[in-house]
Amino acid sequence: MPHHYRCPVCATRSRPYWTRAGAEEHGRAHRRRYHGGDHPFGERIVHAPYRRPRRAEVIAALIALVFLAVSLGRLLV
Image 1 (cartoon, rainbow, N blue to C red):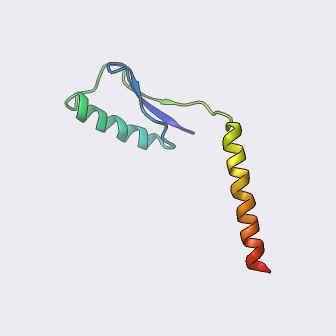
Image 2: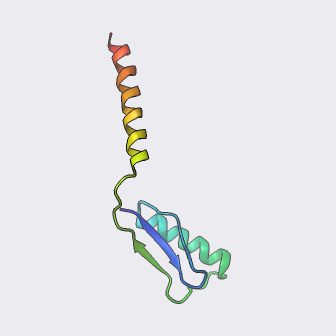
């Protein structure tokens, strides 16, 4: 499940990371760059809720699967 780093001082949220460690590393880099290494009050790693895939994402995945099936079918014949 994705995680985000949130900095309330800058009012920013990181891109989603699939691991908590990824979000924590983003937080360390953010602190070094924007806060001189200090921990802003209220910063945190938040667990992003699951979201259903968008229709375009499902369609793209299905198209990729069809191409893969056709490619494997040609290799087996």
